[in-house]
Image 1 (cartoon, rainbow, N blue to C red):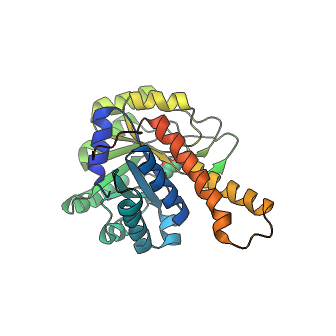
Image 2: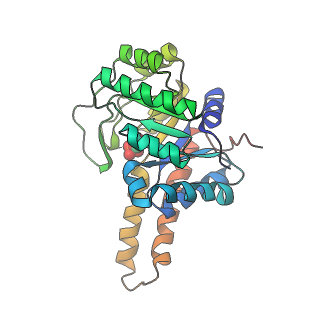
Length: 287
Ligand code: G3H
Ligand code: ZN
């Protein structure tokens, strides 16, 4: 059931679990995530990057997730979200198309410019009842990158996170605290920084780069107030590896459904594992 993200995040915050925000790339991954949420009685955020929106089509993405929320996951809270919107233009396009939750990621700009652009977007979005995630980072790596170590993981400055939160009125905070986009051996979570950010901003925290992070670190971060966890690479890898394997094992198969069904199952497995880890299973507050 389509639900505003504010209700989903507030429930997670009050009940000390995290909601999975899954990056989807096609119809199959949307179906997999929605079916898993319904099966596990879990709230869920289905999100698309600018690249995924270009691939699927903006209106198609809105319509597909709306339909999935109504028909596949009708009993659980579902919302859709723009992930890493890099410009005000893309954010405004998404709001016009019906998004009630967007991420303005101007974190690659100098801090003052990030603050200015984010505030403009937030003021505009709030007039329309839309929630905005802002980012102080940047969070490095690449969605889908796998293996090895990542050099130079930037860490957000606490004073900047506090100033950003106070001056922009942002709804949820994404800050670089040691994770990276992709799946790397040296990903970390600076729990002390997370604690400071939570106590000084008192706002919901979104953990980016959720793939590749040790489960125990994720559990500790949720205990310290991470409310949303983004998962992209694990979804991509599960889908692609399964597709490659299925094609290799069935070189004569001509029915795309037979090649794609195992991919849906693989993404479901990822979503199920994460929902269990994040503690969102059985947290359906629509009951
Ligand atoms: O914005 C998306 C996420 O931060 C995904 O990160 O690819 O490491 O799971 P990940
Ligand atoms: Zn991210």
